[in-house]
Length: 479
Image 1: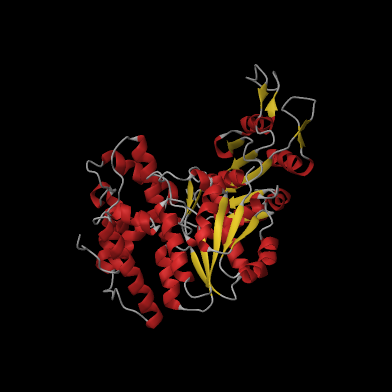
Image 2: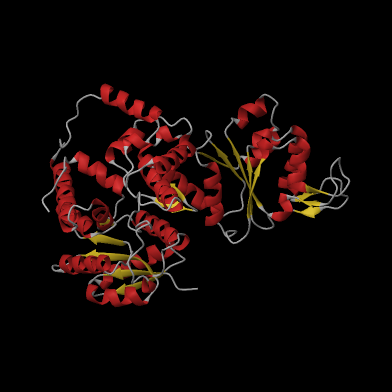
């Protein structure tokens, strides 16, 4: 396995050496290497499995050298996150580093715990997502369908996009949970993505190469549910004309998701509790005992605690499952995720339909933002699939969306109060907005107003770019 390197770049080796012990303790899986001269960094990045760079802008001339390094990384399409540590808290200098492509810019003394957490999360994403090869194999430009590594605000695991703040916090929790074998309980409304999160936990865990098995408990009768879980021997009940291997055997050392766990009958709950407690079970009608070695993730859209209080769910099973509980938020409570999720589904269904639809208009995005999505992510996915099927152009527009969403958008337009876009609160806010607007204009001019290419250069999604164009009132720019 390749060594995972973090490069400490700067002309003050004493400073690099001073933070090495702390970072090494916070990131024990990584090797820290010091590179005194930024000019020497690129050959090392290209020839090693570098997952991040920490650069120091301490002396006169460092800013220009680091700007050249960031430019080279973008030109060569090397998705290596660069974190810059500056000697002073200079707002304008930090803005310049952000414009040049730095993931984060910290002033000294820096919060090394936060820095280590960012590096760790981004390196996990780099290792588990397709298309994120080591730096030395990343000479070719990334596929247009692949997410930019620099989009640190958006994480994708097992095809599921953790795009909102609430979902990114959930990602941090499940990443920690994945390292253990503790049982997990996922709660939330129907369609919030519980099965996808369960698969993400599996993909982030050491069991990722083992089977991932899903059992839909709500769609099976009590007899069939026990047979599906435990298996059965021939003649154990009417219709059992042959032996059947249950999911507990099929999953082996992998992960099993018990979806709609609230639908499991009380008698079967007692047997399930024994599996979780003793790690053994008997196939239906058999006299032999089998070992259970998998991890259990349970999911429900009903309040198990209340069901246990009402005697409809075993309290001992509830407490056994509820070691780690994660509640998935409804889509209406994290509307910032609608755009990235819609783009993700557009890429999936556009590719399946073999069509050239690769963009969603800002008006369509606004319409979807103004809808409450009672069916949550599942409804959004179905909406995009329907829109791709019916769309006759190359861009998905409001007219391609269902009538319920169009009506919600029209009502929101009528109810919306006038806004003062572009207003700033203070000098710092003005500097940030001015620098951001100028950088967007620069990218648009460079790519002849091609918003897709401009978004890729800026390291943001098209959805985010459209919102910024609306915010800064950039409708057209000179070519």
